[in-house]
Length: 238
Ligand SMILES: Cc1cc2nc3c(=O)[nH]c(=O)nc-3n(C[C@H](O)[C@H](O)[C@H](O)COP(=O)(O)OP(=O)(O)OC[C@H]3O[C@@H](n4cnc5c(N)ncnc54)[C@H](O)[C@@H]3O)c2cc1C
Image 1 (tube, rainbow, N blue to C red):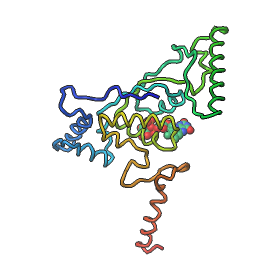
Image 2: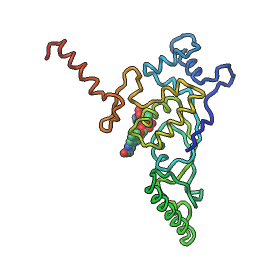
Image 3: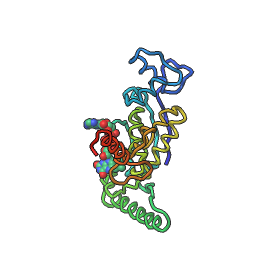
Image 4: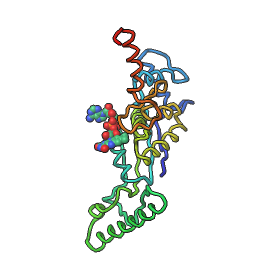
């Protein structure tokens, strides 16, 4: 998998501060008639109090390569992204690359299956006059793809809540882990906010998932129970 940060929002009139969070700070400061700070206090305050809209002023563009079409289906479900991806209608997938999720002997079996599919794909085109767009019907979810993806910081953070969670599939979790590393080079604050949803409020971690909690943090019901019990004691309702 390749994940490269290609571009991110910068000012037209350059300043010494290349961190795009400075633009968020500037935009947020007019809301309160306050002066911008050097350490992005206003931007951080907005994030901490859930006023995420100010984070929509800065964008990040990534080039992603050698990920599966299964991952493409998952990332495409997010509605606040812009994408350009390799077309299986126009591009030939003869000898396609694929993501093998297995190891050892299972991986060998999977390799053989992919080889058979490649043969079938090429038979359809060569002997049945199929166009790429029709022959692709036999291609697997494992088939590799590549895309450019652009989103604002808010979308990136909110997608990370879901896709860095242990309930997300390994491949997409890896992609977001790589995106986080790339963003950390230019905007460490946004990278730090790219966490699974259980850590969205770092001081009060809890898991919002129903089933499949990984156990890293307590579930909300477990956190809330003792508080409720205490309140009942105070109210004399025991
Ligand atoms: C672990 C996991 C398992 C999943 N399993 C399945 C599955 O089995 N089947 C399946 O179909 N999908 C599945 N999904 C995809 C999931 O249901 C969402 O489609 C996907 O995660 C996008 O999330 P979203 O809709 O919250 O956010 P986005 O599309 O990224 O939008 C962000 C936010 O914008 C707001 N928003 C966007 N559009 C609207 C709108 N039209 N109306 C109101 N508010 C809007 C909402 O607040 C939303 O949370 C899974 C996702 C995960 C992480």
